[in-house]
Length: 240
Image (cartoon, rainbow, N blue to C red; front, side):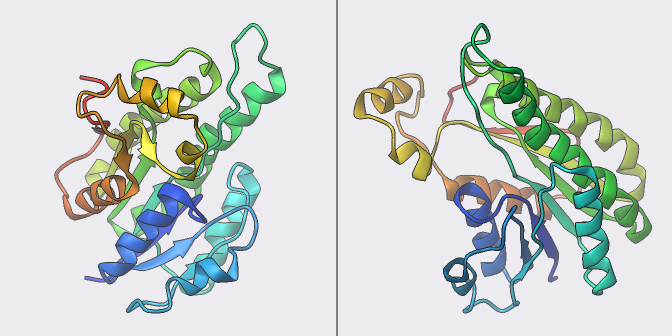
C-alpha cells in the first residue's frame, strides 16, 4: 500500500536518506526544510514511482507548522506517516552556554516535534490510523557532556513520544522514537581522525552507523502496527 510520508528536516543527512528509502519502497514522500529544497536534491527523486512533494517552513514555529499541515490537506494531501527528524545542535559547557543557544535547540528539536504532532494528530484521529516516528538520540538516553541543551531536547522527545502513544493508541495510531548513535554523515566527515577514533572506541561494533540503518528502522516501524510508545536504539552497542 502506498503511504504519504512527511519527513521534517529532510533536505540532507538522515532525513534525506529516510525519504529516499521510503520513495524506493513506493511511498509518496514530502520533503521539508526551512527554505525551499535545492533543485538538485529534488531531481534525485525523479526515478521513483511516486512524485516527490515539498512542504517548506520552519516547523519550530507553532503557527508555521499549523499552516504547513493545513496547506497540505487543502491540496488534498493526506499524511499517513510523520517522521519528526528536524534538529540542530549548539554544543557547549553549561557554564558558558548562552540562553539563546539553549533555547534555540529546545525550540527546534522539542518544540518542532510538538508543533507537528499537535497539528497533525487531529487529522490522524479522523483518519483512524497513522504513524508518528520521532528522531531522538542516544544522547537523550545516556547524556553527554557539553550537550545539556541537546540532551534535554532529545530526552523531552522521548517523554512526548510515550505520553502521546498512550493518548492515541485506541485510534490505531502508533507513536515511537528512534535513538541513533554515531551515524556517518557529512557532519561526521568533518571530524578529525583523533575525534573519530575516540568515538569508535566507545562503540562495541567498532564502526559508525550508516544513514540507511536509520531509514530501515523507520520502515520497520511503519510496517509494524503492534509497537507503540517505544524507543528503538540504533547505536552499535554504544548504550547497552
